[in-house]
Image 1 (tube, rainbow, N blue to C red):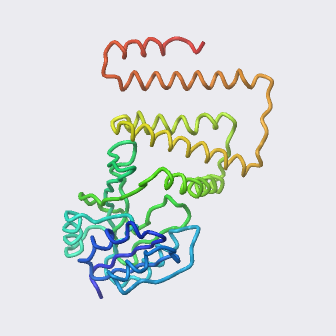
Image 2 (cartoon, rainbow, N blue to C red):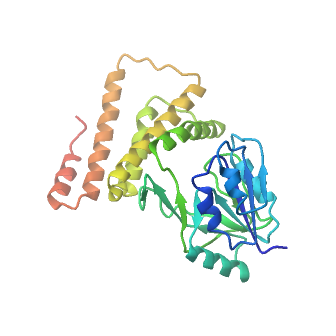
Length: 298
């Protein structure tokens, strides 16, 4: 049995697949399942491996990833996305794990996400641990959510070296995936029995922005961090809207609706000042926001 197999699923990845496959030339086997790509993905892939299989497109892409995993023959499997690249340091660490007596059936690997041409070190995008390396038969995709990870038997170990993830290269790419991802997220919430109320239209996006820009220090990523935090906030607004749609566009008519909106807006402003106080490096500004937030919501 081969020592290490690499499992990849791809669809129209001609701009990424060569770098991905070149980074794992050292592996014993590379298995790639392609979802009928209309670009040069397959032709490029065949230059690196003879185990390229064509399959139908799946709305749940993880089903195709699982097909690639199932077709692997190695004792260990490294699952990669077509836009991921294994670094030299990570290669050495993986070699060490699979050649020794590992303490786990699977391992989390930190990912460095490059978005819009920049490594996003904060905003919740790093270290972005993903279970990518596991023993054959000890890991699989649940195939329930686009954001899920591989589930393994037992607790995963953790590798130190980064996996490079060439994520969103353009705003078009982000928006193009947005519709699919938000639909999947809304369906997942519905299946969990969650329902939304009108105030969630404000809370969903604002909570996401505060979390990413302030709590996860997206401001340290500069303009990239600000834009990505706002984009992720818009993502959550669309999730709310789609879940609301699934509830039948439940109407909410109230004579004092504007007053209720005003109250929610003041709460949001209060939270904004709180984060400015917490993150400000200017003592006078910290004091101002602290005193301002002690005032009642007028």
